[in-house]
Amino acid sequence: MKKRSNYNPYLLPPWLRKTRFFCKQIAIPIAVFQAIRTLIVPTTGDFILLLILVLLCWLFAKDFI
Image (tube, rainbow, N blue to C red; front, top):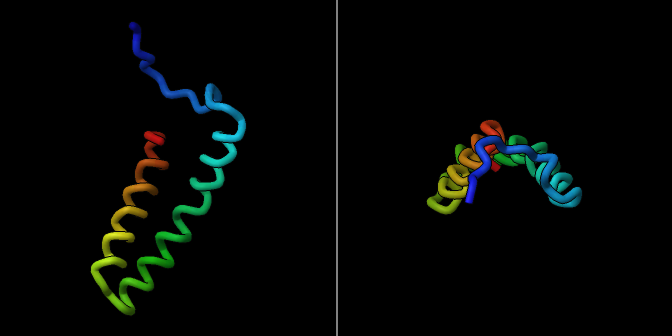
């Protein structure tokens, strides 16, 4: 079985492309809001959520997702 070497988002179904585009656009503002919230009231849950959001933003920027 041959593995594809390039990622092409246009091979995804239209509904998944739209969802991916929406998530890509909204991930950074949510991460910034969470960072401000973590600075004001730092809890373990807020910090873990911030790390997950930052990782998600990085994955969207590198086109891993």
